[in-house]
Image (cartoon, rainbow, N blue to C red):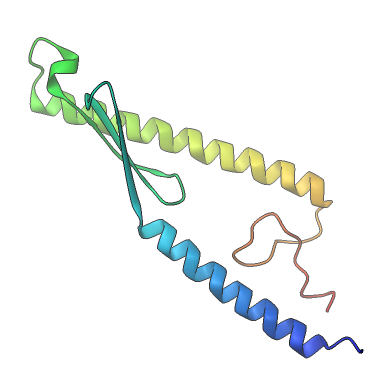
Length: 119
């Protein structure tokens, strides 16, 4: 039984396409969860990125204006987004250490070394 490089490359291309499709599907998916009996609702995409936060006006008490509530919701989304960005950056740095800087990664599979030059 011989090793078939062309077959391996075709399989890698198929996996890469499958991963790209799955990632796109996850980016388009919306998942909603609430806490406090519906007082606060968060919506994330399938990759876990926060898309929106809704807070029931009653949670803030004393009838805040619509602008105040919308600004608070926007600030929460922005803060969580920045925390997620920093977490991804820290993870990328750790993966670079773990892989010994072997390359930029396989497209669609972050953190894995680029095998293009090895095949």
